[in-house]
Length: 218
Image 1 (cartoon, rainbow, N blue to C red):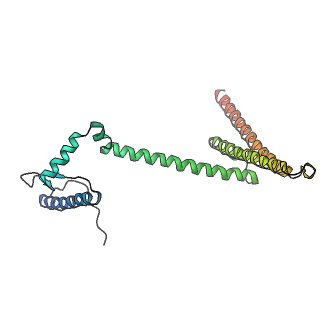
Image 2 (image 1 turned 60 degrees about the vertical axis):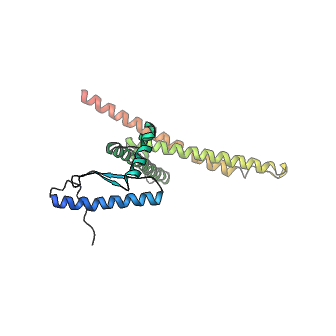
Image 3 (image 1 turned 30 degrees about the horizontal axis):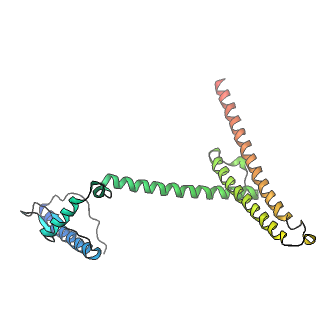
């Protein structure tokens, strides 16, 4: 049987409120004892309630005085550097969640644009069908892939040059270099064509927008 979630609100019934106070106080003192024992940190608990004449101090007044004295000797910076109120705590959580959301949103958008790019490569779709608001993201993904392709071509060329330098001149041919250059040039050419199509699509959409504005003015 699962426990019911406790409603965090003031308990109107005095008898139930007093019973809850005793149970919760016992739980707090138990957790304080566990924290001090497991982590070896000085800790004290002071509880001032309407159900007892004097404040209850745990584990003893001597220990509480030592903890309070140690606290008073600390500088203001040391006292407050890890201190947060509820508003600050919630703001930190919101900021962290927002950053995480932006990160996942960017990753998902890049993955979506990669799929669109490969669809353009295979002929499944055309650049003109892409929404204007998504063209900038599409261009960004193409630019990143283009940089990767150029970088790989440069590495392959350097490796090819270093390997041919170790072979006698009579045995070297240019046929082994050609596939790499042709593969790279075709990839670069594809990206260039895609970028040209994007630019022409943007110009076309801008021209259509200007014509619509002129019609409205007439």
